[in-house]
Structure formats: structure tokens, C-alpha cells
Length: 265
Image (cartoon, rainbow, N blue to C red; front, side, top):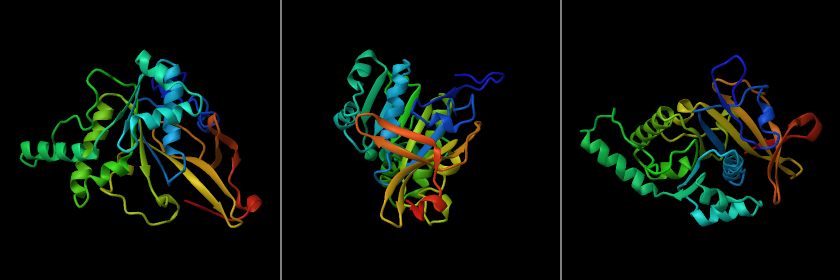
């Protein structure tokens, strides 16, 4: 969709309630690289798959790049919500492909060696399939890619800079999944590998596990950052519904006075 009076175009996820967090006429600017971060079990993978499911129905070409789960598990995960990934794959709108993090590390080493250790080199950093040009990509996950660069933070930073540059130059809108145990923006300590990802990204969407003093648990979501778009700066409730997927409740803002004290992880 295009906001009236502006040249900038926006992408909507189609996830019920989430797009309402943007001001009317806004969304995720096309070509943006957005971090999708949260702790284990917070719903990051499902959020990416749900967005893909909605986009392929609008005949957008989507690529899910997994560095963790094999293709069949992701397909079965989508089917468990009564989505039809195999139909989208057959029609050419969806590709789900698993990649090896070791191949990523080796490619960077080879290219740096060929460039005589110069940092300003051009490369295709993510092995995009030559016969598939996506409108939208989910990369799952940056945490797995980072593990291939253990003890080589400078190499990981080079890779991330090249990755973001590639996505920008090809005008590909992307979600880059990152697992973090503690959100940095709420005062906890987390050493980001490469210390560049948050600064390079155009947006950050955070999914939370909410733990109350009573032992009650909830899920929540927040748009923390989105360059070029206006949005509500609130943490709101989110639920994963069996056989339906994700639903965001923009009217249910987390409130300690009403619900009691809680921690975000």
C-alpha cells in the first residue's frame, strides 16, 4: 500500500491487530530490514511465518531462510495453523530453504582472503537462490549465524554490514530473527556480538514473555523502532491461538497498576 501524498510505500504484515499499531496509512517501509527479537518461545518464528502466509496470499514472493530448522518442520508448523505452504510453493510464491552457517563463515574468509583483507568488498552474503527473486525475506536466525563466527567479532560485523547492504540495494523487505535472553532497552545487560546489528537495522519489533509475580504468564509485543513510519510506543498483549496463529491486541496495553508487577524477558 502507498500512503496518500507520499512516495514512500509500506508493507503490512496482515497479522490481526499488529498493523493497527502503526498510524493510519503507515506500516513497514518497503525495503526495510527489521530485527524481530525476543527470548525462547516468544513467537519470533511464528510471527515471520504468519507474515509470509499473509503475503503469499497477495501474490508476493517470499523466502524463508532457515539456519536452524529443516524445511519440513517449518512447512508442518505452517500446516498446523491450517495454512497452505505447499500450495504457495507449487505456485512459485514461497521458498523455504535451510542453509549451513559454516558455509557463511567460509565464504567470508575466502572473500576476505581474495580481497587481501580489505573490508570494502562486494558479495552476495546469503546465497540467495538465483532462480527466485523475493519481495520479502525472513532470516532465521542471526543468533545461529553469529555462532559460526565465535571469537571473530570483526568477521561477523563485516558479514552483517554486507548483508544489510545487499538487502537495501535489492529493495528487499526483511525480518531478521534474533534471540536475546534479556531486552537491552529495558535496562538489562546484553553484549551484542559485533555491536552493529541494532544500529544497522531500520526497525526493531520485540516479542516478550511476560512473567507476573503471581506466576501468571503472557505474551506481548512492541514496535521499538521503525525508520520512516509512525507507530504507537506501547507494549501490548499478544496471543498464540491454536490453529489460528498470532493475534495482537492493541487496546490491551500492559499495566502494572491493574495487573500487578511483572518482568519482561
